[in-house]
Length: 233
Image (cartoon, rainbow, N blue to C red; front, side, top):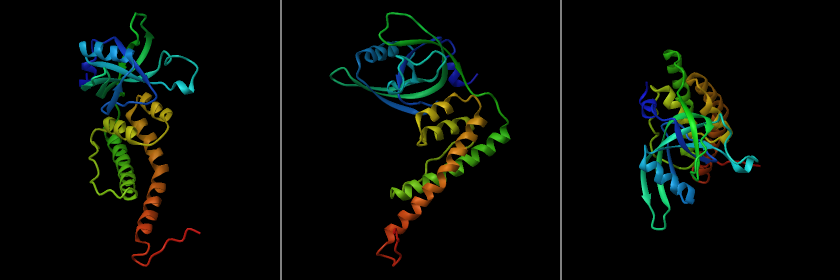
């Protein structure tokens, strides 16, 4: 059993925080807690095991009042809390492990509580995962270099855990700019290999655009200095 699953081994019920975003295991999530019901949730969670679930739920895109039973979310562990004088709090959490909501618990809590089951990816072929991870890392680093060029950044690229394919897939999925619905689909995938394939396809579609913009930016910066001009007409 992994360390993440060990943390939730005895956990069957989980307070839920529906938000219009997707959290992945191993990825930090800063939150600003201000609603009274979630202030209460934070108080209850801190008095217990320090965990709650973040479920993707965008009220502007549905006519239901809660995420449906069966949905997948990510359990988060509180890492740091900064209380504010008026009762609000800034909270730093970290995604731990995914869950599936089996049912909702009817209690007097002002926030949702789900009966959940936790899961991780099924085992895969180590050599194949290694090759997938390397290919995703290469594409992601190409895009990251292009973005740094576009933004005139000189900081070194972050180190990616290429030797940990599942963790790599979550970190890259979290960092990519894409619709939340696609991120949710990636969260729900129970195969690291399949998730890396999907991420590789998405990166492949984006890399030429980013590198093209970086080339144009580099030429534009030299315009008037090196004698090289960019004709946009």
